[in-house]
Amino acid sequence: MELIIKKGQTQQIEGSNYSISLDSVVNDSRCAIEVECIWAGDAIAEFKLLSGNRFEPFELHSNQSLTNDTTINEIKIDLLDITPYPSTQNPINKDNYEAKVRITAIVM
Image (tube, rainbow, N blue to C red; front, top):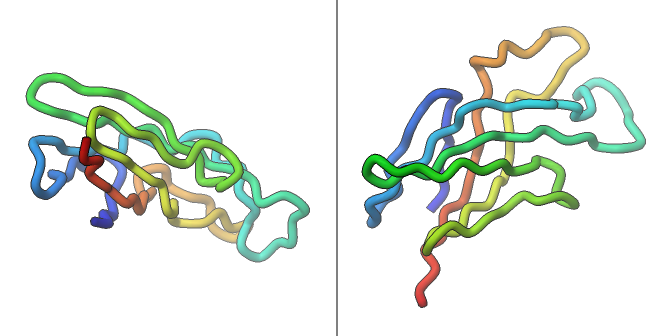
């Protein structure tokens, strides 16, 4: 299943007793959309996986060559995208970030 999570939002993971939240996006060094860059850059998304009153914080990177997935308990989470992209014309309001993730249940 794929989810788009807005900053500060918590979404239930279908078919489980888990939910996921996007706390913030930090260190957004991605290349601006109207610029040609040698390196694509990276943005780090800070999440929490919640179950009842317990939570597991984790970070994922937008750059595919860095850590862009994690497995916690039986839940695998892949970061697919972070929007909006940086622009030299319009600075990003940190409250407007969204993360697209893929959630996969790991059967053991």
